[in-house]
Every structure is written in structure tokens, then in C-alpha cells.
Length: 202
Ligand SMILES: Nc1nc2c(ncn2[C@@H]2O[C@H](COP(=O)(O)OP(=O)(O)OP(=O)(O)O)[C@@H](O)[C@H]2O)c(=O)[nH]1
Ligand SMILES: C[C@H](OP(=O)(O)O)C(=O)O
Image (cartoon, rainbow, N blue to C red; front, side, top):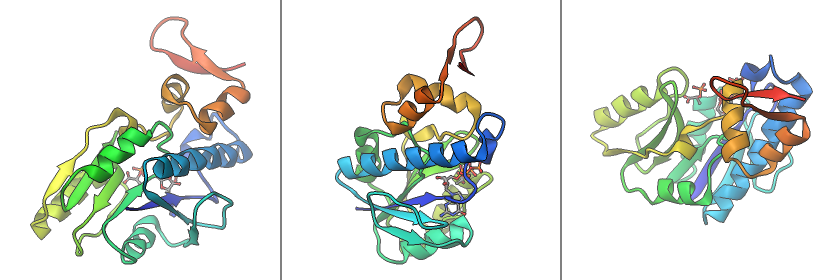
């Protein structure tokens, strides 16, 4: 199955601005992209990166700097079925991606926290993505309006998109790819000194 991996190359991860400087955010986002592409391929699917600017990665890259939903809907027109897996799902595993693409349904969604849509499989020819805000609810409504069968994949690993500093804790604990290595090399470690486990930088 085609797996489109959208990647905002130019100004990535602005919600991590208090934790990483712009250069670090680009490098960290790029490390997560590489992990997602490798995981998708290990799951036996075919990654295609949809980036806002050229990027060196082990997968075909299409550059499209239009807004996310517009670019993704155009990419979906290149052939269904197709999945869209976000480039910041650094905890995704071969098994969780396989579970996503093997789940039957006209539209299959792996929700993210905050009513997001972290990954989606589209088999219905008239379905269109509409990202940002409560996109999970918007996608469920859109599927119902089409009479499309929608399925939800409840997965910790697909639900964890790395957007904010608290997400870095999950990556340190559960990740095992280049993005986690990048964090460790940058001096990040768990802060387990009482209360909820956080993150600190040596
Ligand atoms: N191709 C493309 N990818 C995008 C765009 N906006 C976000 N993405 C990607 O979509 C995924 C989810 O988006 P966000 O979580 O908002 O990522 P982000 O924009 O880097 O993060 P913030 O700046 O904190 O919003 C990430 O993998 C982004 O790289 C876009 O306009 N075009
Ligand atoms: C892609 C987008 O991510 P967010 O902007 O919500 O982090 C969404 O999940 O709709």
C-alpha cells in the first residue's frame, strides 16, 4: 500500500520552540521522518514523502508547499488505497503500521491526542482529508456523510505524535530509532525526581 508521509521541512515543530532552537528542530524533525519512512518500509508498505521543500530521505519525495490538506488530497488522487502517516509518529512500529494498513474499512483512522488524525487509510474515492483542529471528528463526519464505513485503530504508538515537550518523554521511554538517539546525543534525559516524569537537558 502507498503510504504518504507529509513533512513540513521548512519550519517544523514550532511547539518545541521552548526546548529546541530552529536548527535543532529541523534536525530532530528530520530524524523522526527517517524513522517513520524506515518503519513504513519495514511494514511492507511503500513510503512516499510529501514535503514542503526538498529533503534527502530514503524514499520518493514530492515537493508541494501548499497547505497540508490540499497537498495530501492531491497526493491521494494518485491512487487508492493509500495511507497517510505523519512524519512525527516516532513511536510507530512495523507492527502498528501493519495493523493500520490491514484494518478493513473505507476510511481507517488512528487518532492522535487533542482530536487529531495521526494516520489514516483511505479506500473511498470521494473521501478528502481536512487536517488541523478536531480533524478526527471532522473525518468521522465526512465519512458518515459519504456513507463510508469508518474504523478507528486504537494504538498508543500511532496516537503519540511528537509535538510538545511532554511527548519527548514518551520517545525516550518507548522509542528506539534515530530520533531517540538524537535526543540522547543532544543531552536529554528523563527527570524522574518526583511527580510526573518529565524531561531535562544535561
Ligand atoms: N507537506 C506538509 N506537511 C505538513 C504541513 N504541516 C505539517 N506537516 C506535517 O504533518 C505532520 C503533523 O503536523 P504538525 O504536528 O502540525 O507538525 P509541525 O507543523 O511540524 O508542528 P507545529 O509547527 O508544532 O505545528 C508533521 O509530520 C508535519 O511535518 C504542510 O503544510 N505540508
Ligand atoms: C495534522 C494535524 O496535526 P495537529 O495540527 O492537530 O497537530 C491533525 O492531526 O489534524
